[in-house]
Length: 370
Length: 191
Image (cartoon, rainbow over all chains, first blue to last red; front, side, top):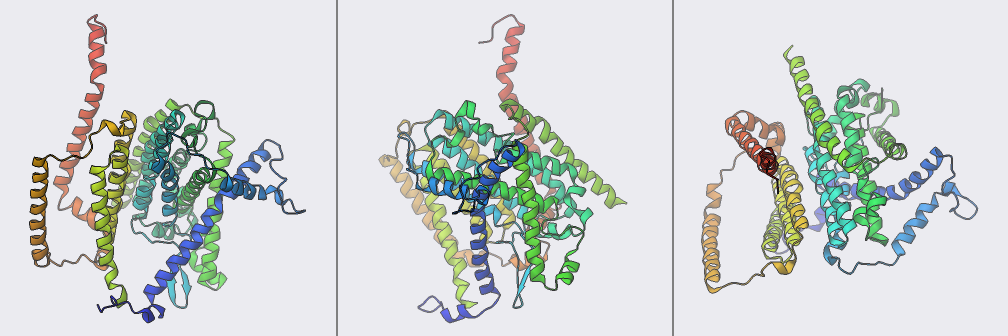
């Protein structure tokens, strides 16, 4: 190292695998973060229009641009602007630091997990291979569970720091629920690891190349457990006791308003999307187009880059189905009682999850023994 | 790429500094919740250090088990006890404590400098690079192979130990109920 610590700026400008990785990382992260920020406004709109559709109402349809109504799509924009510019009120007895940090703790894990999901097959630009996930982790599953287990801190800190009994009760409920359902959620993915023999999400998607190799067919019970736990893990209906309005005002974010309240929204919707994308990746072939293997897709479209774009759209389509499912279920099933939720988690989901793991292992051992 | 050779080293010192800083904050913070959150940060930075050493499996397990599960229970207990910061004594040293602290620090300095002097010879440069592990089948595979072949016996013993602890916990938690039932059976009233 010289006096300038060996920094040679001219070598930064030469393209090689390292600089391509660096630049593509920044670009991919920017695109991903920008995309994730668009989810809450759109989902809020969907969450108002879809129940209106189900209940034969109109829903918000007024806010538009000049003479175009756009089906009320700009209502979300108006709401976002309102939330950002509202006055911030911090409760007197709140713990100032943690009160402000809690929304950050809620948003950060969701964004970090989104980085590990493979959104499409590799891009090929000027001879450099660019994988379409922000980071390629070879222990993808463990990474996702490790980071998602940190989401509890946001919720519990928010409730505790607000210095409000409803907030604290809501946060205790929410965090107990998240911890309880994390276990069957992990259990439900173990058979997938056993079947495909890897923890790498990218390799799992590649293994699901034909329609009947999808996780939904190879591990149907896992899909069932995963989907149920997915609702509990994001505190969504029918497991949204954390914000039971009639008992707890609004749960852990009772004392939050303006932009910090919006941050909780962001965290909730992004983690919904992340779990939807994970479910699509693990059980519905990720970016694979049904009935069309990747090789023939490339041959059909003539370029791996166009195939990659098709793959991304495919994954988004599959994730959208799960996002729709969230709202569908919310307006179909009534809320559970708290003891029902806990006994469902510990006495029903966990034993079934364990049996599923053992059963899959036995079947695989028998198949391998033959 | 010659330029970036110094990056891992700088990263190591940044992470070590953050680990030391958050460790000090864990023991010196007045508010127990602050301590717990700094403990989470501490464990998270240690995991980052593992990840920097290409031990992705260990890093993920570190966050999953310690930061994600154990400290959550700490936070729960602290919140439920609702300790006030003023209920805890601040950091005040008596002369004797200060002397002990000083001696400990000097001892650490001596051991640390000795380790730093002998470390390059002590560490056997094994085949532990990212590429070698990738060739051997990946992080998880390598750990699993070792754990279920060479170290199967200690691994299973540890799991039995944990099982014993769980059973003991359940018994301790059930104690009151059992005693109460016994009282009731003898015609006494459970208090």
